[in-house]
Length: 474
Image 1 (cartoon, rainbow, N blue to C red):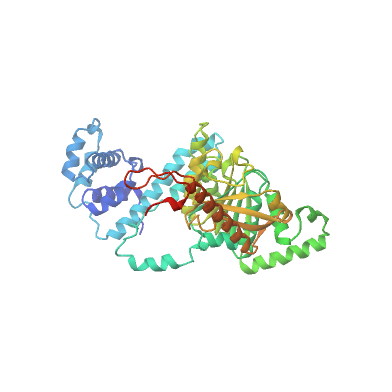
Image 2 (image 1 turned 60 degrees about the vertical axis):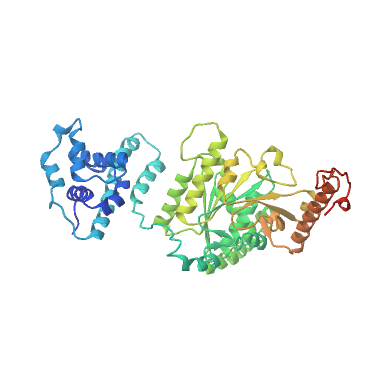
């Protein structure tokens, strides 16, 4: 038998004052607006004020004293006060029942408040996505039952966690998986950095096609290109046909090629859903609504999300500031929070600044607009191309930041690229070995040259000039 909100509100307040365990769990989530009765609202707000001031749950006598100082004390209903403060009015024998019904009460009151707060906005033709977001956040409320990871009590679980690959999603390229120890963990933000035309969108299209073929549900969100144009790029990859030649195929040949990849995708259980938003108009809140709608409307829960690309997203914090550092940092933080909430990896891209456009080396200093982005993302890979690489169909990837591995391990590596087919592919590892060996040799050579040119000060306070290591006294 369910209990009404008007009945349960009194039960909640009575136990709040007499059950410290319950009060400690519930107080952080309570608000006065959840109570429709003015006296109950006053009691709740007094308890919250006491807790904020003294950092403890008030006892009934303490709260009575505090409430006597309230300016509206004369307007309170004494019957309601006596019922809530009484000794045996609303005793509850089951703690679990009390917690469960409190969660339902707060969720219902949040939804009710959402109706009230958005009605005027709806009547004035307000943005439906924003209104929907308010309701979804209200319905999503629940008590967090976890107290966190107990270092001692949970120690036997950690070996399996450290050695398990289940929580990582392969990039689908051998070298990317190698430097990240198996791929991307869930709840992470993974970013490609490149100049205009180098291959940010190509890289994401290629990886998305591979993920769909391998059985993953892929969401591809674009803020720059129309849904069908993105689909065309992925289809060129999947059909193994140059993008510009797709229109030359007969309908029969097109259908045959389409059926081949579609059958593979259906057998594996993979799929790709494309969604376009106008540039700079959508933020993590819109993406969150979209993911919830996909689950509710078509029953699809995604394994990975692509966002093309980060710099042209909006921020849900609504800042009108022209400070690009703050804006881009906010966007990165919101997208990473989205990844954590839905427990999926997100892949996105960001633009280099003008100085990094044609560089053969990329670093944090080449990130456009905000170093805050680099501080937030979990991994940042630079895409580098030049005339020599283009002639040999290669693309160099540089590790700039990598929370999953050591950036010094294959700091740079090579992958194959077919621009016409929007595809990245594995090539022999020797190309990456040679690249890193050259880097080590150059670094060692430079260090030796610098060392040999030093005037050494020898032990004992005697200055002895020398131009080579043989002059050192040991």
